[in-house]
Image (cartoon, rainbow, N blue to C red; front, side, top):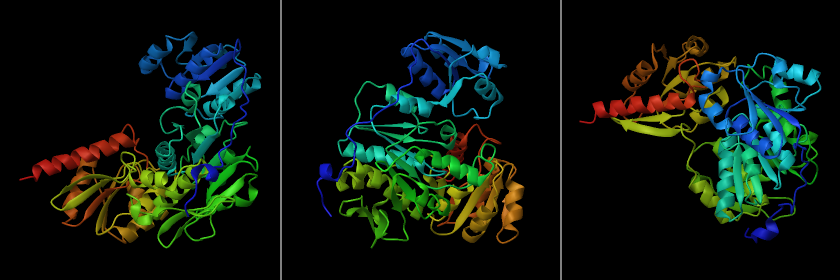
Length: 473
C-alpha cells in the first residue's frame, strides 16, 4: 500500500476567494472577545470605517479596550440599542452572539449585511480550507491533521474555534498550502458562501440546548459546512453516527465515509489496522489501532477522519502514523491526574456533554468510581445515567444536575451527592481501592460551580496532588 505522496494528493492548485470590499465601508464588529479583536484588526487594515460594540460594561472589557484602542475604530461598550451601531453596511458578529439576537434582527431590518468571522475569513482565503465540526472530537481531529501535514512538510495553519481565529490565519502574510479549521455550530449560524475544500462531520448529539433546542435543527446547522460544496470538494462523514449518516445521500460533494463497521468505507479498520482510501487511489495502511495513545473506538474514528484529510493533501503514511503515535490529548481530556495509594485519577473535565462522557467511559479499564454532574444545558441525562450504571461501581455527583442523575440511575448502583467538589474527590478516593480508577467525566457544563471546564479540571488535579502529599509517607 505504498505510494508517492504527490501522486496521491488531491489538493487543488488554487482557490477562488470571493472578497468582500471593505475599503471605505462602514463595518460594525459585534463582540470584543478574541474573535472580535482579530476581526477588527483585519477590517481596519483594509480601510473599513469600523465600530466595535459589546453589551458588557467597560469594566469587564479592560484588556480588550486597551488592545482595540490602538486601532482606528470607534469603541462602544455596554451597547443598548441598534442606533449605537452607526448605520453600518456590514456587521461581523462573534460566535458568542446568537444569530437571532434582537440587535441583529434590528440590523437586518435596517438593511445591514450580517455575517460571522468564518464567512469573512473564507471570502479572503488564498488557500484551500479543511473544516471540521461535530459535537465532540473536532479539536482532536484538527490538531491531528495539522501535525500530520507538518510532519509531511506541507505548510498549513491550524485555526478556528480551537484557538487562533480563522481570520488571523487568513491575514498572515506567509503563503500556505492549506488551512485547517475547527468550526463550531455557533460559527455555522452565520455562514453564507463558506465553501471548504474538505468538510468533516464527526458526530451530532444533543448539546448547547439553550442555543439549539431541537436536535434536527442542530443537525441541519452542522450540515451548513457542506452547503456550498460541489463534486470537486470532499465531505468526510462518520457513518457510525446515525444522524450524520442521514446526510450521505444529500450532499453535492464527493463523500468519503468513515465506518468501523464496514471495510468498504473510505476510512475503516481491517485486521486491527487503520486503512484509508481516496477516490481513484489504492488503499493506504496508516498504522495499527494499538498505536493510538488513547484507547476507545471514537478515537479510532477521529484518527481515520484526520488521516483521510491529510492523505488528500499528500501526507505520507509515515507522517500520519507519527502524528497519531505522538498525539498528546488536549488538557483535561482523559488526562492522568496522578495515582494515590494505588488509585488512579483521570481528569476528563472536557467531557461537558453526555455523548463525550459516555464515549470516554469505555476507554477506562478496571473498577471505576465516577464523578459527574454540573449544569446540564437542558440535555436529557438518562442515556448517560444508563452508561454510568453499567460501567461504574459508584457515582459521586456534584452541581445542579446531581439529583437528576441520581434519580435516573434509580438505585442500580450507589450514587452519592457531595456537598462540594472537594468532598466529591475525597469521597471517591475513600470508595476506591488499589487498582481502581477515579474518573472525573461530568457529562455537564461547569458554569454552576466554576469559571469553565479548565478550572474544574485544574482544581480536580490540585485536590489529587494534595491527597498525594498527604499519603506520600
